[in-house]
Length: 302
Image 1 (cartoon, rainbow, N blue to C red):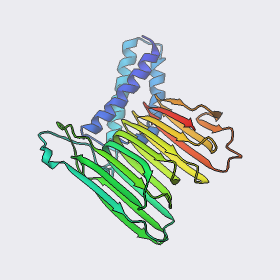
Image 2 (image 1 turned 90 degrees about the vertical axis):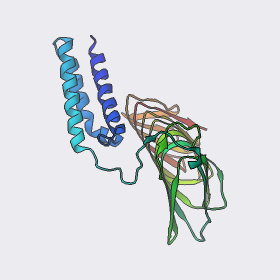
Image 3 (image 1 turned 180 degrees about the vertical axis):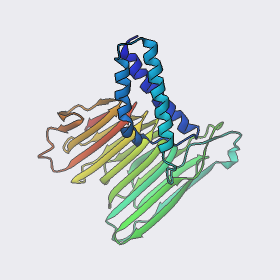
Image 4 (image 1 turned 60 degrees about the vertical axis):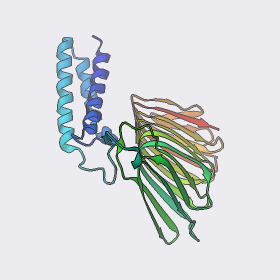
């Protein structure tokens, strides 16, 4: 048996077990914790090249995986805070499906705004401007959201959080469209699960965007209206497409596990560090920090 098969096979078994136990509610698995588990890969690698019989390597690798799962369960976080775990319920009556519309007028004197979106699943789109600070429109579905808006001095904070479970046995989709004002400087935090996310932000001034997701199809298109934009993506089992203006300088810091990336137009500076040729002289700069597992990542320059 090839040692590569033992190495990657056991790594996938370990990763799949952690995700499965999370979904079953045995403990909470955070993708950010993978960075603390990287020494286990060295152990698997060492086992795979030991000069011994294949079945001995398999037993050793599975034993290490089991011990790792046990240790992680003891160290696993107790809560995701306000994050809503995806749960499934049967025998749902369609009469429980609702539509939700939410708008917040644009306050006078606002220079900065932040939007936090916590969502388990659905199809989300953002492709138009609004005269309001935000317009939120969800078509009839079982999903429900809570909204919170606070304004202090020259900044407004918007929080949109899922407040329902995902139901099995219904064909109704959770389709959400959002429109935002182009006036303020925006900070975004998206905590998302399964679904599709198609966000056209070319008309928005994006200062910071943080995305934490899994099993999602993600397509973000950024504009060139901000001198410095910080993009942070932490995702697993996802397809991620990021579209950036060709005139903006772009820098990428990447840390990936079993992931593929397509970043044409970037020069390799060092391991996991890439830049576009125009980064130093570009007036506007975009910095991307990417941490992915079992995902694909593509950057298009338009």
